[in-house]
Image (cartoon, rainbow, N blue to C red; front, side, top):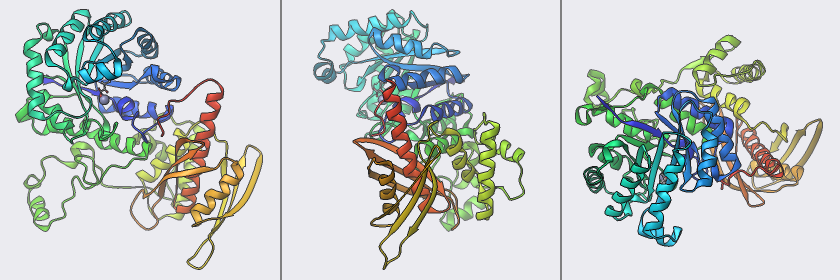
Amino acid sequence: MEKVVIFDTTLRDGEQAPGFSMNINEKIMVAKQLAKLGVDVIEAGFPAASPGDFESVRAVAENVKGPIIAGLCRANRKDIEIGAEAVRAAERRRIHTFIATSEIHMKYKLKMSEEEVLERAVDAVKFARNFTDDVEFSAEDATRSDLDFLCKVIEKVIDAGATTINIPDTVGYAIPSEFKEKISYIMNKVPNIDKVIVSVHCHNDLGLAVANSLAAIEAGARQVECTINGIGERAGNAALEEIVMALRTRKDFFGLTTSINTSEIYRTSQLVSHITGVYVQPNKAIVGKNAFAHEAGIHQHGVLENPLTYEIMTPESVGFPSSRIVFGKHSGRHALKKKLEALGFTDVTEDQLNRIFERVKRLADRKKEVFDDDIFVIAQEEILAIPFKTFELEYVHTVSGNKLLPTATVRLRRGEEIYQDSAIGDGPVDAAYKAIDRITQTPGKLVSYQLRAITQGKDAIGEVTVRVSFNGTVVTGKGSSVDVIEASVKAYINAVNRYFYRKQLESQGIELKITET
Ligand code: KIV
Ligand code: ZN
């Protein structure tokens, strides 16, 4: 059966969306999970965008085996040189170069004529071929481009050596039947199109990204660019899990296959959600927590008699777990190590294991049942956190009530030094944040605050995600605890530390891309 190449751009188009940024450790972990999921290509970033981006792409290229590692580059030689260096260590590497072909982009953004764009595209592809024989070319805003000009560019870049041609619906403007026609037109009109794989890259502004991708597949596209949970700029990109499960569930219709190990889908979705702190909507297809829940009595009856009455795919096929209790007071280090491996934490050091073990044990004392997700958030804090902790929480005490002035006392450690201060606020969390601001002398403005229960029950771990603006730079912080005040304070301190980490890198001349705003 013919195969559709799955090109994952979670770490590039997904990560570049506001509020989705990941640190380098987190990106490596996601990339390793994508390899386990079986994606064919991982677009690891946009190396010329910033030194931070370059380092992340290089780290993924060095550490992740299996998929092709791609780096995105504008159609200029400098970007391509930087991109080529970033992916050099990969087992298999791809340079993905792009330039816009629509009239509106050429006129207002590039300020270039059709001839200049064509020349740049051809030069970029030829230059990229000096570094690898796997070169992808994207015609940005292809769906709003003049179709005959688009065909001409495609023909010339294939002659120049491109091996994959990507047709992006950059602004999510296409309609499925129209997009299918456009792809068919390109397939028929471009004389050398049979020498390449035709790819599509659809944005979701009209909620049609997956539908458009599938329509393009019907017309002969054999690569789709997509992200886990559909994350990405604005309304996001086409969701990988939806495309893959549509192809699998409707094999009778498409007659195509992918290399995705679908039982890893749910785990990958959760990993991306945990790491970014952006939660999956409950009714999201394939990976939402209600995706397989049957509430209506008539449905439940049917499903019990025969699951096929209302289920077109099984929860097991996407690795949907029934939340299991995994850890008790008497479980040992060995069991924990195995569990961490199953959760994707494969390179845990002895020291990290000990710290996680102590925390999980303490949790097991406070909470009756410890779930996979509880262990995940603890491991995430211990393993994936930035390697730089300016401040650590020693102690927090809050007083509040409906007839009291909320007050907080916070004690923080920085190296050997201890700092303590108190403040009043609009509530206990606000008071604690003000006390921290007094200690750090770096006041933050809370942009957003999100609290969610990681697992079920009144004693569930609460995970808090905050976005805080320090001197105009917005950073994300996360913290977890069974005590929501403590989780809130930890999240704020995490944001403070990330801000100081950023400042430290900047003082070394390493500027992180401002993706956290
Ligand atoms: O949306 C888009 O056009 C892109 C290209 C750079 C592929 O992300
Ligand atoms: Zn895009």
